[in-house]
Amino acid sequence: MSVDTLLGLPSNMVGYAFLLALLARVTGYTPRTVTGHLNQVHIYESHLKAAELLRSRLLDSPVSRLVFNETTAPRPDPVFLEPCGWFLKTCDHSHYEIQNYHPQEAIPGLVMAV
Image (cartoon, rainbow, N blue to C red; front, side, top):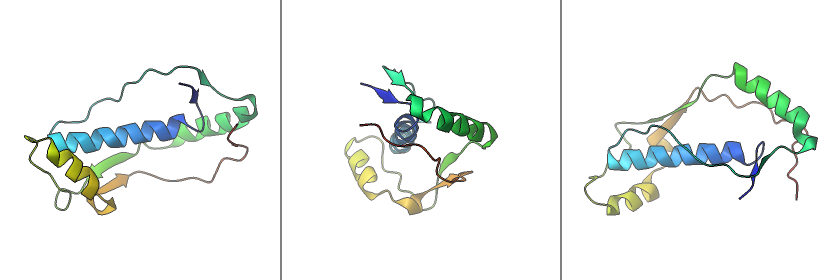
């Protein structure tokens, strides 16, 4: 599988971390680290200026954090696997908050290569 560093990798990493947090919530474990193996990682030449801009933004940005609302987020009994599906189906934006997330303007020049 190929990894488009600027367009695909950031959203994939956020998705994996969010899923880890949800599964940890259901099972009662503390989420730790998302580890993966990347293959065919690349940046297109037309994305080099955008990559530099993104890098400069990341260096100046605080780290975002996913926090569950302890009073409203469901916490099913982790003894059974069935609640995992129930939790994933019933969890919505009122059950969590993303702290220190500050969206910035779109980076010009980032066009998906096909």
